[in-house]
Length: 195
Image (cartoon, rainbow, N blue to C red):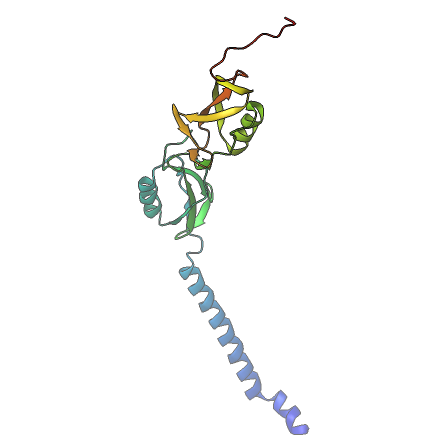
């Protein structure tokens, strides 16, 4: 036990501990310097405003700023932006980011997504209009033909052509409903005897 206590008080142990401490400080300092250099510590780039740019313009701007990009594919068509232009970006314009940071952009599609025309044949005009609105379509006008079912939908038209339930139309399209006027085809309306 006495030898161990003498060893703890010896100059050799103190010198070795001092050298180990100096080596630890030196290695830590070198590691921090390497991290600063490899992560571009303190070197920030302002995120450019990509709004309304075409994809080609956006690519050039991103590359010139030493950034990367990824297109997010989940946008709904926005008629206030040009087709195939940037409508959103993350991080937003003006933020400071490190070089080589990935910027996520959302591109405006070429038009509205297509929706399926619901089966509204033999449905009342009022219910048909509600069903169309629910999928993103609108009624532009209603025309009437001689058919017994008053206000019953018999045909659906889009741009003057008959369409069928299940057909696909661009969202926000306006359709024409062809409904019955309550008259039997081929006969004029008959007044009742009480009139």
